[in-house]
Image (cartoon, rainbow, N blue to C red; front, side, top):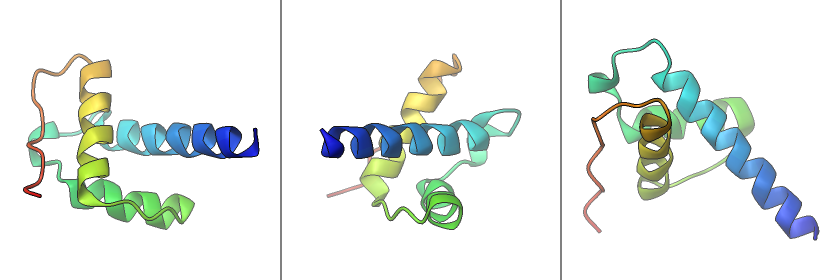
Length: 74
């Protein structure tokens, strides 16, 4: 139960961070590094590039943007 709450809270924080980068900004200039830095600076969360791209793309879809970030090469 506690793990579910933590996971849900983490997800909400990362979505808020992604939204704050997307809202009212030039989305063409977004990078995964922007979200990585913001998530750490604001919430002390460490995420990798693939996860950052997923959250940014989810935020872009939610805001109705057609642009998507490319997944990092694994």
